[in-house]
Amino acid sequence: MAVYEHTYKPYSGEMTADWSRALVIPRHMFGAIFQSKLFVGLFAFCYLCPLVMAVLIYLHHNLNALKILNLDVSNLVAIDGAFFLSYCRFQFAMSFLLTVIVGPILISQDLSNNALPLYLARPLSRAEYVLGKSSVLGFLLSLITWIPGLLLFGLQCSLEGWSWLAKNIWIAGSILTASLVRIAILTLLAMAVSAFIKRRIAASAVLFAIFIMPQPMVLVIDQLFRTNWGSIVSLTQVMGDVTFSLFRVDRDDIFGFGSLPPVAVEWSVLIITAAACLLVLSSKIRAYEVSR
Amino acid sequence: METVIGLNQLSVNLAGRPILKGLQCELRGRAIGLLGPNGAGKTTLIHTLLGFYPPSSGTAFLFGKDIRSGARQMRALVGYMPERDSFIAEMTCVHFVRYMAELSGVPPQAALERAHESLFYVGLGEARYRKLGTYSLGMKQLAKLAQAIAHGPKLIFLDEPTNGLDPPARLRMLELIRQIRDSGSVQIVLSSHLLRDVEECCEEIMILKDGKLVVYCNLEEERKANRKFLEMETQGDLNGFVEAINALGCEHAITGRGRIKIVLQNGARVRDLYKVAGASSVQIRSLNYKRDSLEDIFIKAMENGDGGL
Image 1 (cartoon, rainbow over the protein chains, first blue to last red):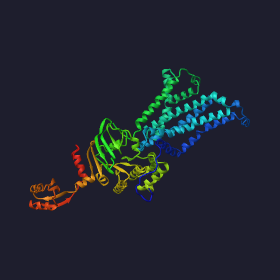
Image 2: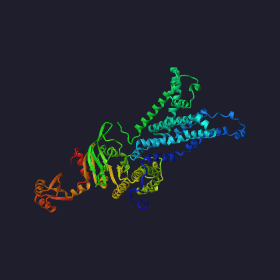
Image 3: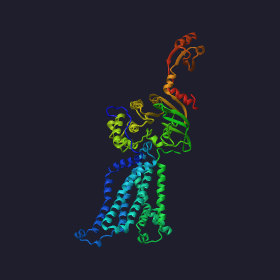
């Protein structure tokens, strides 16, 4: 239909593959997200830690550079599990901040504008809609967690050699697993909050509250019941503990107190959280809500 | 003509309440009007056909495909203009229409072209780079129409498309709907409680009341069938006149004081009516050919809510 004709003509061109429909959502979302200067600034800042760690790895293997900087290799931090654990802890904190910025707009925008019927009147299922929206956060968080993490690991392997790789291959698995767990929980929580709260600032505040508020509660529970199981009410601590266990760090050594909840319990907390988020999404992502 | 929508004892319950009750009919027209008072189930029927609500019993077919099993393929063939405001306020209109076209399966470049074309077509060409949140109600309605046609669907559901429009905007919207209908490449289902809108655009109607189908008729055929309706205003004693009309073999109905409706049958002509009126000392003050209007059909349907006319 030419512009000057102003008559209705049907579309007779080719159509995209069925499976690619969900990918349209992240493509358009990225365009909107990267228009925010705050987001771009924070996203760039997220690469500071990987950059510093890449320099540290490089210095470990470059005696000339160490000489120029007047440094001794023994003064540098060792490149081992603890090194990559520190990387993950910093990047996970950054991933939380990114989630607080991006997460609330994922679904709330569509809900507040009543746009869901338009999505779901097209060849796009509810699951594909959720997948498309979650892939936005999933992809962004991957770009700052496990992807640079594995690149750092690869850099270390390439400089240190096969023997180091053979001995430390579990670190790559830990980076990947810990990151994916963190991404899954953050994404699901952000989507569930976004589906519940239509105002962006309120949704961001609720996300903060979910992760920060339970911290004092942990102390209260531990003091009241003389236990160390209070941590299971704090997702921050649960995810932290799971990360420690994945990096083969004894948590009791770090925190100096015994009988922490078993890792299996903490995995269960994460699974229950994910299931609850999916339940919320399943009830909220509908073309129209049926009032009872 | 191919059946566009087939309803086979379709019932829908929402929150335990029956909303649609055993709808049964086949719709074939290029433009199908869904009429009914508020709460009759028009929008629920559209939502069910779009796969938003599952049928509690029975089923429906769109272009022969069962909505229970082929909802996804079916939705690729339809465009939907919802009743309520539905858009993404922060997006420009052209971006929004493009986005929706892409979600329907149009490749990105073609979707952008179609978005521009659709917006020019509906008359939003100059405003297409404005954010949707800044649009007036009339412009939002046009933007909703643009997103419903951008991907070139075979069937378009228009739910109260003239809601909130001022008279010029309403006429423009109806003109667009007629143009789309007359393009011949797309079928339209128009849901409205405004009889004029449906009468001006549709050739087939379905009237719902309390979730039941009370009337299904082809307006064109109905108009043709009722060509010989005469409405007369008379003065004088009607008894003798009515007997004379009976003797002519014409059906009649007294619709008010001195007002009578007659169907000319068995070769009777208007001249015969004047003759029998003169013989019965009845003055015919006015005589008009009248077709049963949609309003008549609707009012009768609402009065005989059990389904008969």
